[in-house]
Image: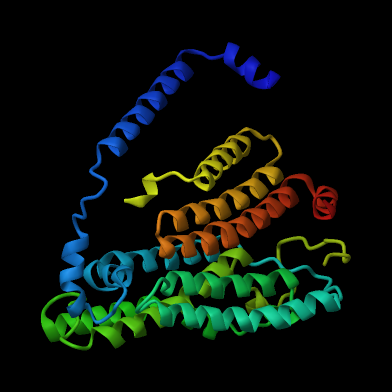
Length: 245
Length: 95
């Protein structure tokens, strides 16, 4: 509290201007929120009318992957770009000295990781008619990867890189491929052919979920896999004490 | 639009979210800020559920709380390792 008091005294002109701007922003936002007609569905009706054609029952999935599929395509690309950026910066850190994983932790991972993968697959499947979808499923899948990374399973270090890369680009490639396919078939980018929308969306979602999961886990690992260098003589100094976990 | 009907739960939820956000921004300890951020994400997921947006709630719980938090923690660990050397790293990990 005393610190805030001190800061308050030191408020210079620039900060005062910022404060004024923030207050204006809050007031503007408040005005917008209060003046928005709450109970008037604008796009809900339009979506509900077109729901039949989209091939899925969930309106959210219909918007995300059919009506506004282009946005989702770009989002998936952004995630891929994030991984490319991280991989080009540094390589993943694994402690040199592999410590013994405690049995309790190992048991938790053994129990949770498969269940998480199952839940992820279920969420992707559920996305066609209820809440769920590629991003949610992919996030759970990625969390399973994070769990294994935190446990520092020794197998993760020697994970083969080509399948990992393939998994990372699977979603974007599938999405782009289907988009181009639709361009040739129907003349519209991502304009799914009549009746094929349902399973095309499911195919895209499955691929994207895999890619998103791997993306998030790779981001957590924080760099490219280093077994291209056989895990030896890496420039990063690895002198972490062995008593982790 | 029933989310304008504030129940007691909503009021408590909103108040605690504001309180957590305030402390999150005000704290000097980055580790504490990360932990507060994770709890904020969980409460935010609850808020999305209250606003009848289960899709967003799922994504928020999984991404906001489940993945961004650990991502921040690992970034914090890396930051400490490069900035202060290994001694600081050890003290952080035992914390």
